[in-house]
Amino acid sequence: MDSLQQAWHGLNLLLMAAGLAAIHAALCKLLWRRALAGLPWWRLALWCTLAALAAELGGILWTGHDGAMPTYGAIVVALALTTWLVAFAPWRRAP
Image (cartoon, rainbow, N blue to C red; front, side, top):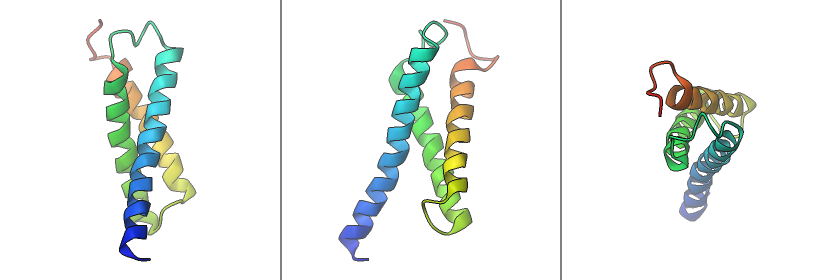
């Protein structure tokens, strides 16, 4: 793989995590409209993107390659856990 292909591959890894986080945040804001009224979409999407990237990098380190099903499962768990921590945790201040 040459350097241009490696750059595109890395960019696609970042975009996959960011895209999933954006879709997840939008769906959460739609489903829990009242509960998440005080939380901006971009803040939830940012935290979810960071969690998805961490899960993706951890999966790559664990399995040795990208595209493994345990990595995708870890991303789903990371998105759900991050949403709970940012939006629904007991210590979160009510709006």
